[in-house]
Length: 529
Image: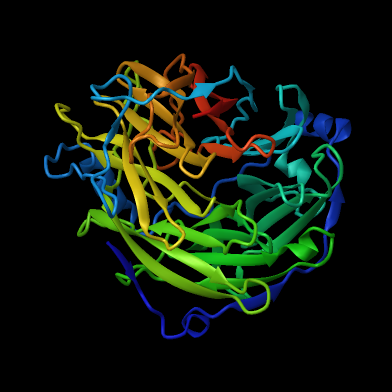
């Protein structure tokens, strides 16, 4: 069932707050000098200004996370389309009655090695001749066969627009095929001065080793109004007209979550070195009255398509599961932007449990139910996130991948839960390669498997809601412990995908695996369903 929530007037209820950057673009050119400086200089890495990461209290989140392990016979949601029952898709290790053929992936190549940060936060964008990769808190370019052109830290990359004491984190990347440009985005803050920024860098051509324009936008302002909030977990999307930035806004000085922010930045100034203007939307609510959290903008690949964003409904101890997502549509993004909201019913989902790993180390943090990524292609909107699932015969719940496809009217075309008995699947990212085909990348672990990088695919014509057997991209080699200040064994926080602009039938994946005791590494691969 699909329901629509009408707003009295989107431009009034959620007012577009206009703003402008303090200055235009600053030129930066990566190369031998930047690479040498980045490899020699230590990364600036101060703690975040708050322990909060969720729209609920830490104790409430811990209650949900701890209870996620407990087997609940009633929490075995059947993923359904609006028309028919969609199959729950099992991995090759389970007893699927009919398994589609597995996707085909190349050998791939090593991405950015461990930087000393946790978690790694993979991002990738693939153009005609290069693959750009980023992690916390470095960026690199490779040719499509894996030869590295450069690698440097984000501190060096953005040093011309930020103070030296700023911490840069959570990078995102997109390749704009229509304009033949790469877009790099990250968040940054300076805790002492209560400063928070969105950082944007745009290549001036399709060659990422040549010149870029870099920008800094004040994230503490809503439009032009100063707030007492900082931006965490930025999202990046784009369409033909604008770049879309999102963030979860938290109060300074260890304050709680306040609201989600959407910032719309027209491309014209970004792509020419001008002074960017922007429009902010803040304080959006779901149909049930809860505040939006983890709003994820789409990478819009269809020419002329309208920008869209998706978020899940965040569970609470009183409502530990949800069964709908909210889809947002942006109209008139340049001159007079408005938001239209639609609630879409789906199968139930809930906070995933921590992921056991071989060797007895502390379980890996699997995050929450926030949407990991969104892509619009051939009129279909694809999204993925993590849920808990009670597989038949398991003594405890497992983390599993939840994915969905919406049609052009924002109705559910298909959905599925992907995983296997006794194994945890988490931090997915999905990329469509045809109208009905796609690839998905994810982390996987179990009491018999170290944290590994895996992927799967579905072909056009496969049974609705299903994926083929997963492929092992890079097997984990050891246990991993990387505890943060809250005691979480940090992994992820996200994997990454990119369409291939030279081959519409293939896509690229990028994610992490354990390469040695307590050390993450990253790997890039190209595949077809």
